[in-house]
Image (cartoon, rainbow, N blue to C red; front, side, top):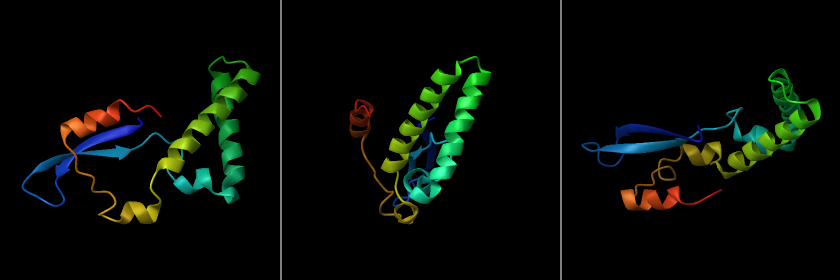
Length: 111
Protein backbone atom coordinates (compact mmCIF):
# COMPACT_ATOMS: atom_id res chain seq x y z
CA UNK A 1 0.00 0.00 0.00
CA UNK A 2 1.29 3.42 -0.87
CA UNK A 3 -0.55 5.11 1.98
CA UNK A 4 -1.48 3.45 5.27
CA UNK A 5 -4.38 5.10 7.13
CA UNK A 6 -4.76 4.93 10.93
CA UNK A 7 -6.68 6.75 13.68
CA UNK A 8 -4.93 8.28 16.67
CA UNK A 9 -5.36 11.08 19.18
CA UNK A 10 -4.56 14.46 17.64
CA UNK A 11 -1.05 15.35 18.84
CA UNK A 12 -1.99 18.96 19.61
CA UNK A 13 -5.54 18.43 20.83
CA UNK A 14 -5.67 15.03 22.53
CA UNK A 15 -9.43 15.10 23.15
CA UNK A 16 -9.95 14.69 19.37
CA UNK A 17 -9.23 11.70 17.18
CA UNK A 18 -7.42 12.32 13.92
CA UNK A 19 -6.90 10.32 10.77
CA UNK A 20 -3.23 9.73 10.16
CA UNK A 21 -1.71 8.67 6.86
CA UNK A 22 1.65 6.93 6.89
CA UNK A 23 3.68 6.45 3.71
CA UNK A 24 4.28 2.83 2.84
CA UNK A 25 4.90 1.10 -0.44
CA UNK A 26 8.64 0.39 -0.40
CA UNK A 27 10.16 -3.07 -0.56
CA UNK A 28 13.06 -1.90 1.62
CA UNK A 29 11.84 0.43 4.34
CA UNK A 30 14.89 2.68 4.32
CA UNK A 31 15.00 5.82 2.23
CA UNK A 32 18.81 5.79 2.25
CA UNK A 33 19.02 2.45 0.44
CA UNK A 34 17.27 4.03 -2.55
CA UNK A 35 19.09 7.37 -2.64
CA UNK A 36 22.65 6.69 -1.39
CA UNK A 37 25.30 5.54 -3.86
CA UNK A 38 26.91 3.26 -1.26
CA UNK A 39 23.81 1.04 -1.47
CA UNK A 40 24.03 0.51 -5.25
CA UNK A 41 24.93 -3.20 -4.77
CA UNK A 42 21.83 -3.66 -2.59
CA UNK A 43 19.66 -2.04 -5.26
CA UNK A 44 21.21 -4.29 -7.93
CA UNK A 45 20.48 -7.36 -5.79
CA UNK A 46 16.90 -6.15 -5.29
CA UNK A 47 16.39 -5.80 -9.05
CA UNK A 48 17.78 -9.31 -9.59
CA UNK A 49 15.50 -10.67 -6.85
CA UNK A 50 12.38 -9.00 -8.27
CA UNK A 51 13.27 -10.22 -11.77
CA UNK A 52 13.65 -13.77 -10.46
CA UNK A 53 10.26 -13.59 -8.72
CA UNK A 54 8.67 -12.36 -11.95
CA UNK A 55 10.29 -15.21 -13.88
CA UNK A 56 8.95 -17.71 -11.35
CA UNK A 57 5.52 -16.21 -12.02
CA UNK A 58 5.95 -16.98 -15.73
CA UNK A 59 7.32 -13.70 -17.10
CA UNK A 60 10.04 -14.02 -19.75
CA UNK A 61 13.55 -13.21 -18.45
CA UNK A 62 14.09 -10.11 -20.59
CA UNK A 63 10.66 -8.68 -19.75
CA UNK A 64 11.14 -9.54 -16.07
CA UNK A 65 14.44 -7.63 -15.99
CA UNK A 66 12.79 -4.56 -17.54
CA UNK A 67 9.83 -4.73 -15.18
CA UNK A 68 12.11 -5.19 -12.16
CA UNK A 69 14.03 -2.05 -13.12
CA UNK A 70 10.74 -0.16 -13.56
CA UNK A 71 9.69 -1.26 -10.06
CA UNK A 72 13.00 -0.04 -8.62
CA UNK A 73 12.64 3.28 -10.46
CA UNK A 74 9.14 3.76 -9.02
CA UNK A 75 10.28 2.86 -5.51
CA UNK A 76 13.25 5.22 -5.84
CA UNK A 77 10.89 8.05 -6.80
CA UNK A 78 8.71 7.26 -3.79
CA UNK A 79 11.73 7.06 -1.47
CA UNK A 80 13.07 10.37 -2.75
CA UNK A 81 9.77 12.02 -1.82
CA UNK A 82 9.84 10.59 1.72
CA UNK A 83 11.15 12.58 4.67
CA UNK A 84 14.65 11.84 5.88
CA UNK A 85 14.81 10.06 9.26
CA UNK A 86 15.72 13.38 10.93
CA UNK A 87 12.78 15.17 9.28
CA UNK A 88 10.41 12.32 10.17
CA UNK A 89 11.47 12.49 13.83
CA UNK A 90 10.45 16.17 14.07
CA UNK A 91 6.85 16.35 15.35
CA UNK A 92 6.32 19.74 13.68
CA UNK A 93 7.36 18.39 10.29
CA UNK A 94 4.94 15.46 10.50
CA UNK A 95 1.94 17.41 11.84
CA UNK A 96 0.01 18.42 8.74
CA UNK A 97 -3.55 18.88 9.90
CA UNK A 98 -6.00 19.57 7.06
CA UNK A 99 -9.70 19.57 6.37
CA UNK A 100 -11.49 16.81 4.47
CA UNK A 101 -11.69 19.15 1.46
CA UNK A 102 -7.92 19.73 1.56
CA UNK A 103 -7.32 15.99 1.79
CA UNK A 104 -9.61 15.38 -1.20
CA UNK A 105 -7.52 17.83 -3.21
CA UNK A 106 -4.46 15.59 -2.69
CA UNK A 107 -6.43 12.60 -3.96
CA UNK A 108 -6.58 14.21 -7.40
CA UNK A 109 -2.84 14.77 -7.71
CA UNK A 110 -1.07 12.15 -9.79
CA UNK A 111 2.53 11.21 -9.25
